[in-house]
Length: 214
Image 1 (cartoon, rainbow, N blue to C red):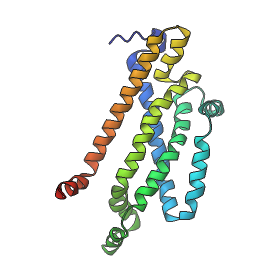
Image 2: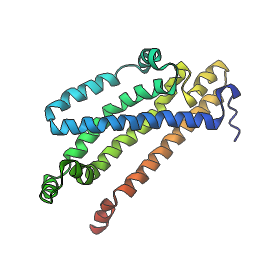
Image 3: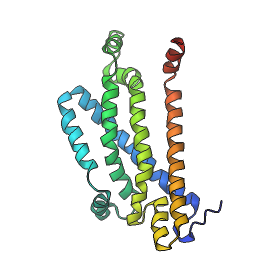
Image 4: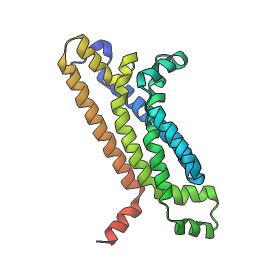
C-alpha cells in the first residue's frame, strides 16, 4: 500500500496502530470513569449538576494546555494524549450513562428485588443491560470524536495520522493532508459501524421486541 507517507513519520501500519490505541484507549478509559460517576449521580441526584458542570469545564480546556501540563509528568508519550481525550469524553458519556440508568423501569427493578437480587447483581444483570443502548450511543460519539482529536497530538509529536497535516505544511504537500483526512474519516466510519454491530449483538431482546410488533 503506497500512500506516499514520508519515511520519517513511520509506516502506515505504525501510524494506524498509534492512532487507534490513543483514540480507543481514551474512549474506553473515559467510559470506565463515566460508569461509576453515572451510578453516583443516579443514586444521589444532587451530585449530578456539579459532576456535569465539572466535566463541562474540563471539556472547555484547550487540548494544548492539557498537553503542556501533562508533559511534566508523563513526558511526550501516548499517555499525554490519552488522558485529556478521556477527560473530554466524560462530557458526553456521563449524561448518557445517567439517562440510560434512569431509563430502567422501576417495575423491572422491583421485580429483580422481589426475586432476591442483591444490588450489585441487579446492576450487572438488569440495570446495565437495559441502559446499554444509551451508554453505547455515548461511546460511539466519544470514539468518533477522539479519532479526530488524536490528530491534535501532532502539536507535541504524538498525533499519529495528525502528523500528516503538519508534514503537509512543512513539505508543501497537499496530498498528505488529503490522505490524513481520508484515513481519519474511514477510521471513524469503521469504528462506528463496529460499535453498532456490538450493540446489535449485545441487545438481542430489542430485535425480538421490534420483530414482534411488526
